[in-house]
Image 1 (cartoon, rainbow, N blue to C red):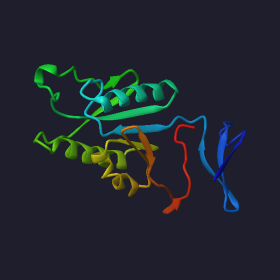
Image 2: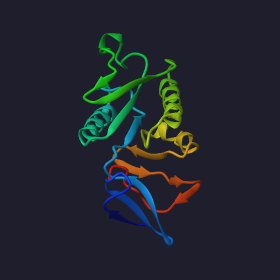
Image 3: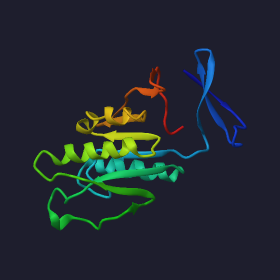
Image 4: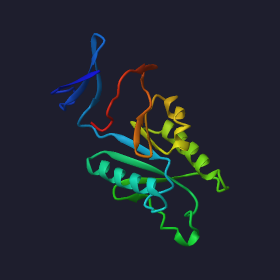
Length: 178
């Protein structure tokens, strides 16, 4: 697929068109800010693991570019113990933070928080669902049922898992952040 940019969209802003298969299709206005949800981490701000540091840095940089980012944090306590818990925040450096239900049993915290976060992402008004970690990626199909664009980051490899439009699998990759 190839993209063309056409000035003067219906709202006066630039419009991005998808060209191919005989017709052009409007993908999104490039001046509109994206609503991105990130999940699969324990919580931010935190130094509980490498994923948390990556999510925190990436989320704050995306917000600085003018987009909207929501991070679904696990409910519960720090992995090292209650004494390491931080103050519960609703916003951190422009990133909206929301808690998701978490069943605090050995081996179930990640699964339950990921599943509930994906359910909330699926029914929420988000343009892109960004999933971190292999375990969470197993549930990528949940937001796909609601026609969401889903991207998964596993370790250092970014994997785009099919982008669907009107029930058809779209060939090629689409960069969500322009």
